[in-house]
Amino acid sequence: MKPKKLILVTSDAHPLNKAFQNITDSISKELGIEKEVKTEDYSFLADYGEKDDFGMSWLPQLFVQMDDGKIYPILTNLPLDKSLKPDEEEGKKEALNKIKNLTS
Image (cartoon, rainbow, N blue to C red; front, side, top):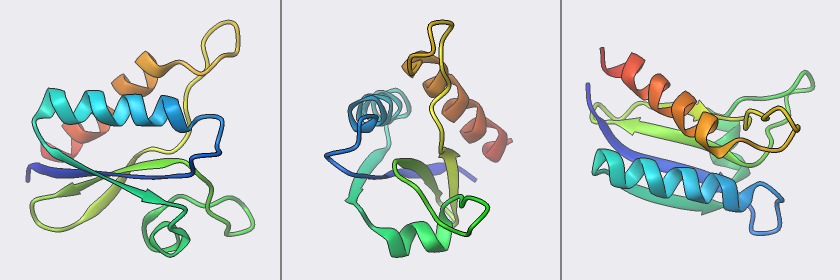
């Protein structure tokens, strides 16, 4: 199983949108796979995304589609650094590790 495409579901107005966009771009380049950005696609999130205790999905969430067609969430919450700011580098590592685990 190999990663085929990254799918980012986000909102332009979300404070973490830019961070998730940067991570998606970086992983796409590093792995040489295409990316797709869906804006506020809650039906996609309902099918594939993580949900809170009330069954509600949130934005943004990053997914990988494998070459067998299956879709997996790889980054749904951005880790925070020591100063409690979003840590893009850690988020990228987390997403890459999840892809690596799916392919092994």
